[in-house]
Length: 132
Image (cartoon, rainbow, N blue to C red; front, side, top):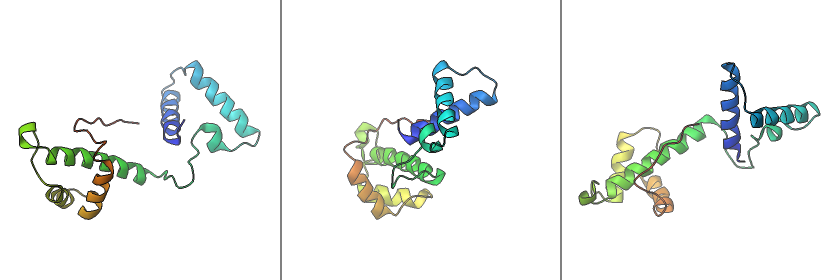
């Protein structure tokens, strides 16, 4: 399980506990094992499944930036799609320039163009925002 999924799982469990809801047998077993491991001197992040690998960012800012970039990629895909397909028919340069002028917290237009070239073959116009 990835550290992000571990964070999501812990958040879900915390919400259930705060609302006095019954935990599923799997969540209860997970918590019991993790707490026993921690009480025996084990690493808490590993036991709870939230240990990030070297170089991975775990801050809220990094997570938010990733979400903003995903939204930007969806907008770029639509902006560059032909007008006959419901797009704006813009060039990559025009789309990235307009996007960086109107949105905050984005990298420069040049950086967005480089990022786009890395993801353009995997980016779909229909995208879905997944919440925690």
